[in-house]
Amino acid sequence: MKLEQPTPNAAIRGIVPDAPVAVVGVQWYGSETLELTCKTPSGKVVSELLYSLNKPEESILSIVEFMDGESHQTHYLHQQFTREPDFGVTSVNYDFADLLASAGLSA
Image 1 (cartoon, rainbow, N blue to C red):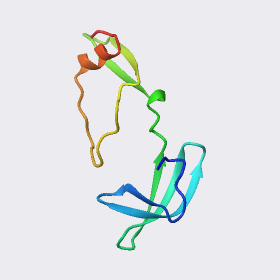
Image 2: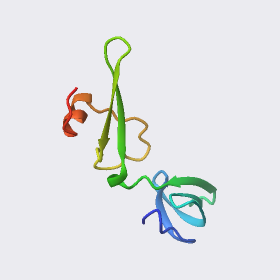
Image 3: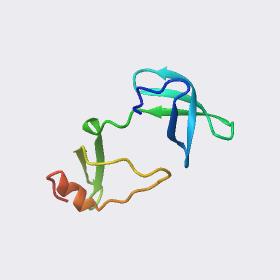
Image 4: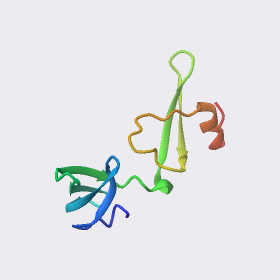
């Protein structure tokens, strides 16, 4: 199901770990953010703000490289990620030189 499609009574995954939830209500805020109110299998009502970040063609990663002294260089990398992190992931580490190389840049 895409972010643009949740409707009341739809069953979706990814809101709570290891269980589908039933959509109770959907409230849009602009075109890319929505508040999703759901009911878990245990009957608990949860509300989540969801953002339309699933547009890899529009993603830009900004990296600031700090040099000797006070100088720095900013790199903007387009479309660097091939998939979303797994549910519950709070940190993903990338090799700095590999990221720049994949964008055709050098450290």
